[in-house]
Image (cartoon, rainbow, N blue to C red; front, side, top):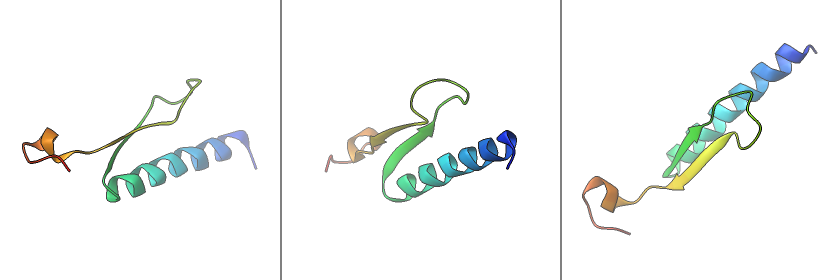
Length: 55
């Protein structure tokens, strides 16, 4: 498998994980690609940020 193929698979995996975390109530943001460090920034969503009561 070529290097490009592995990179595309990795990018798809990052977005899949971000979507699953979002579905579970987390705020997941993919970082800029080709940068050393984390691929996702994740935080727990709180209702107080949206104007409701905090959990």
